[in-house]
Amino acid sequence: MAKKQIRIGLIGYGFMGRAHSNAFAQVGHFFPSEHELVLQAVCARDAAKAQEFADKWGYKSIETDWKKLIARDDIDLVDIAVPNNLHAEIAVAAAKAGKMILCEKPLALNSKEAEKMVKAIDKAGVPNMVWYNYRRCPAVVLAKQLIDSGKLGKVFHYRANFLQDWTINPDLPQGGAALWRLDVKAAGSGVTGDLLAHCIDTAIWLNGGIKDVSAMTETFIKERKHNLTGKVEKVGIDDACAFLCHFNNGSLGLFESTRYARGHKALYTFEINGETMSLKWDLHDLHRLQIFDHKDVGAERGWKSVHVSDGDHPYTGKWWVPGLQLGYEHSFIHQVVEFIAGLESGKGAKPDFKDGLATDYVVDAVLSSAKSRKWTKVKQVKASKA
Ligand SMILES: NC(=O)c1ccc[n+]([C@@H]2O[C@H](COP(=O)([O-])OP(=O)(O)OC[C@H]3O[C@@H](n4cnc5c(N)ncnc54)[C@H](O)[C@@H]3O)[C@@H](O)[C@H]2O)c1
View 1 (tube, rainbow, N blue to C red):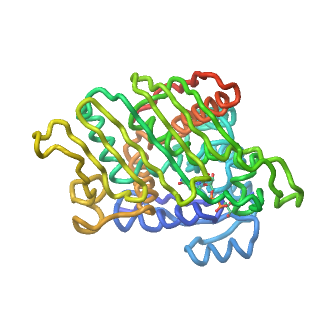
View 2: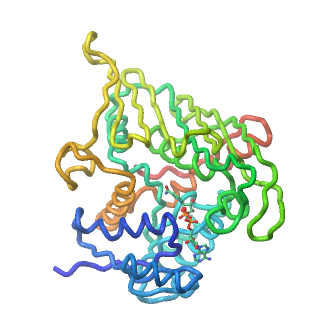
View 3: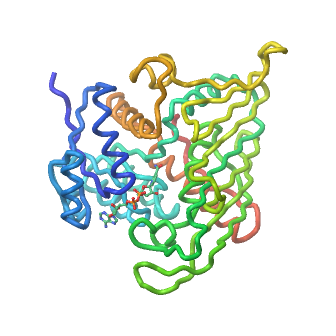
């Protein structure tokens, strides 16, 4: 039977453009489905660079204006892999054009923009997903399965951090290619929307919604040269953020992120403590899940490190043989697996734009609490199914 084609138009060919292209190219080899992904076009402002990328990754054509890409009849799905300030405008236009949409995280610069995006996809009824890829690491899915099975009992604590060290140098400029994350106009916020957004999305998925937050942020370097204006300008992003929260299930949350933790490049960890079981995960060891089961017999009770690579672990049976581990890039491939499965079941894929909005509500509440120095309620999105 002929497969149904999904003709992809990718916008942005940076870090995520590559991660997504790799996922699109690989998924059919390991997870056969009724669908075939076609790398139809890549869009970037510089034609020569776009062509170079198209040749390297196998895209059939290029565009230099995302509006033209969206207007094309031979594009079924628009993949948004550009800086945060462009997500909303592109997604709303793509929804109006009836395209399926994959959008990078955070969904938008702020929750106001994200609400408009949710409205647009609701109105258009188009399949959508946000690239919160850590949900799709096999060890994180295993954590989800253990939590959903009730093995943890009542949950008391959830803690997560995401630590980096790449902006300590005060001479590092802000703005423009590669450094847009330091420019508040392009990024929306600093570590809160960039790094903590990942921690928040995973936390909501594993432990349910967040009720209220109490946060502090700091901008250690107050002024930096702006690459686009050439002038020294005020830095508008948060360099570090820590917050406490209450989850709707009564558990307490503790989150920290910074780009000033010397020695840490991408230390994303989470831990969840329940009455009868605790779980720990670490991005540096992403194929392992640490499990403490209080029901184990006394003398043998202790933390065990499960190498999540066996045939019956999530996704792993479709890859190599038991014991051979998967890596970062597989989380993106698994997201595409979920997106296709959502199309084929008609149920849609998670995390969708509503889930992205839920995280943006928490991000906004965190930034607002840090400003007011007060506990701040988190706006809730109507619950969507896991
Ligand atoms: N899921 C994840 O783990 C993860 C990791 C990194 C980045 N991200 C997100 O992905 C998005 C992109 O980040 P990145 O690290 O790939 O950035 P990047 O700087 O590596 O790439 C951004 C790309 O967007 C292009 N671009 C900018 N303006 C454009 C325009 N008007 N038209 C077409 N192309 C344009 C740039 O030329 C560049 O190719 C951001 O939203 C970021 O938050 C997510």
